[in-house]
Amino acid sequence: MRRKDREVTDLGAIGRIIGDCKVLRLGMVDEGRPYVVPMNFGFDLRDGVLELYCHSAPEGRKVEVLRRKPEVCFEMDCGHRLVEAEAACGYGFAYSSVIGEGTVGFIEDHEEKLRALLRIMEHQTGRSDFSIPDAALRGVLVFGVAVGSFTAKQRLLPQRP
Image (cartoon, rainbow, N blue to C red; front, side):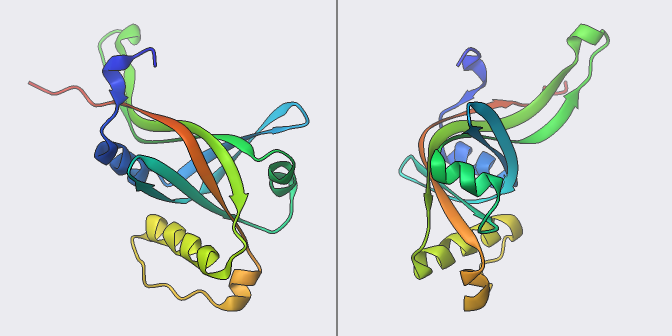
């Protein structure tokens, strides 16, 4: 990371950043060309191991690409605020972000699929009391991203005197 002064290494802080982000951008390679889709997600971060969960229609371009080539990258960001200045070159942007790469695995097991969907719902809504009918569970594709590596970065708003 070029800007070491903005790097976030504390896992608790990284977990809070991920918790504040509601959309990740999932990057794939489709026949040699980049392909990126925004997705809502859920996650688990335990002992430095990050697992992301996404859901999708059972078919479509994204699913076809992931089945052929499950290696992905991702980016998520939040906390966007303009940092104003007198001169144009002094302007900047406050943000928090996490970037990484991993491998997609499709979740077929009924209980694991349900757990992943509930993690998505909890992350997106703050609630964990949802009931998901079996028919809905059978009709949706759920996949996890086993994250191999990730970094976090943050630029906070400057402190006012």
